[in-house]
Amino acid sequence: MSFGKMPIANAFIKNLKTKEYLFELAPGFCPNCSLFQLIKQPNPNKLFHKDYAFFAGTSLKMQKHFKNLATKLINRFGLKKNDLTVEIGNNDGGVVNYLAMKKFKNLGVDPSLNVARSAKSKGVSMFNGFFNFPTARKIKKKYGEAKVFIAQNTLAHIPDINSVFRGVEELLTPDGIMVTEDPYLPIMLKKGSYDQIYDEHVFILSLTAMINICKKFNLRIFDVEILKTAGGSLRYFICRDNNRNISNRVKKQLRFEKKLNLKSLKTYKKFKEKCEKSKYALISKLKELKKKKKSIVGYGATSKSTTIFNYSGIDSSLIDYITDTTPTKINKFSPGTHIPIKSYNYFEKNYPDYCLLLAWNHKDEIFLKEKKKFSKKGKWIIHLPKLQILSK
Ligand code: DWN
Image (cartoon, rainbow, N blue to C red; front, side, top):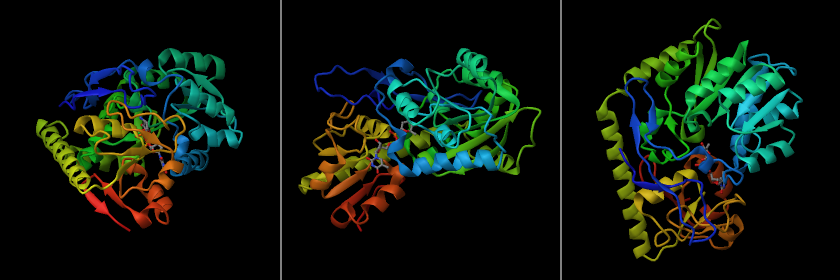
């Protein structure tokens, strides 16, 4: 399955003359290991560097989500102040930020220098680099073993996933746990949320695939939780193989996955059809509105929107501008399709007739904020799971 040539999802450009790096965005499914994954991925150094555009702190709801996990680690798993927690891809803070606030021993690991600096300025101990087996050894030597290892929307970003698990096997204390969450394959297939597929998401994970990986490294998934975050995710609780009983929730989720025919080509053909339908429904709605001279703005310059716009060929003839609260994205242009990105302040002074909700995973938070603002004047276009127009 191919979505065509794509630029780097978070490579917002300053200058329209910039020559953009393009690659073929084509996911596939491996019937042996059950991984849904990109066939080709650009070198991770092109994605995560000193000027990474995404700052997780832009969503208050996600901050609450991280804080809740920190509390859960203390209450459910009895984390003590001297127990080391390592979080990879913790961006500008993450869960370890909330542990650091309570003076728990912590270490964040992130390859993007600007976000890592932001986390450090908040009081998180940081290691600036990619996490893999050699990094795990370095961490163990310097800080000791980790009682908790966290990866929030990070594992699916790392091509050498085996090296990460080998690192976890090396780093965890005998009774340690790993907590990880990522967008969940069955939810993506059901919603037709093809915009979860872009360079950073090397994998869209499932419980079946995760069990296969864990087995290779003497690890066991002992519990799972279905989450609404990141467009629909699964959180996995993992321990060493001889520890903890497997919960009924894991067994139930596995039975659910078995019924979904995840290994059948038909499943992915159906998904591809959904993607095509979604794309044409969106393009025709935007064209219809433009014919009526309506103004349309994208809300949230997400990584996901790079896939939508480039796959659908949607540019500034259909979307006037995109509004975003992230300083690193403002006054730049969207990758590949060159739609200008404007500040929230600009948006408030230039409300359009319609907003296309690109940050649909933050719908509740955004709708709450806009209830008394934009929503009083304009309408929303929601493209998933079915195209909808919402007015107040
Ligand atoms: O896995 C990943 C997820 C968790 O975060 C990464 N690969 C990168 C990133 O993906 P994304 O860019 O699709 O994430 P978001 O969280 O959907 O991006 C939301 C965007 O919308 C941000 O640029 C911030 C912006 N925003 C805004 O302008 N106003 C967000 C909120 C909540 C707002 O009120």
